[in-house]
Image (cartoon, rainbow, N blue to C red; front, side, top):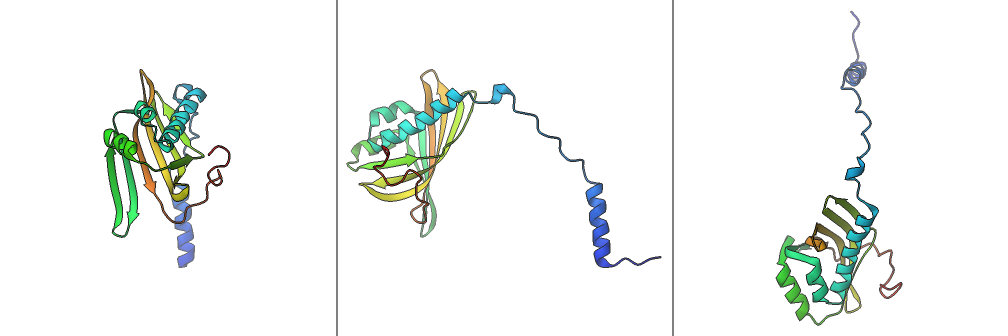
Length: 179
């Protein structure tokens, strides 16, 4: 009987396990047309997120009130010395707090990833935030939207706050190109 070396035995074991494994997965079928978002819906959802940020930047609580569904929440996570801090603000508190602010904000988004299906949508987008003309922070905004009788409404916003190491916005500095 021939003795096998350890590397040879390993190679034989690998070959047997590869050859006797399950068959490769079949190519996934294409997504049915009924599950593909219409281009118009993607544009509508993206526009709601853009209008939301423009209204936030203008402290336009009337527009924001129309975009936020009743019961909407705003959730954030911010890294601190003691670790991450989660914060939740109700729709009413958000609008009231923004109306009381006398600061100039600018929040911009770019390269959104948008998913839409049957009245449910999500926008995931990088953003930067400027306060009184100075860079404050960056992060990711996630808008969750539902389509009701009044159209698309924001039901939830989640975002993170990153103060250091932000990649510069592809939009350039504020004030250029209408930003």
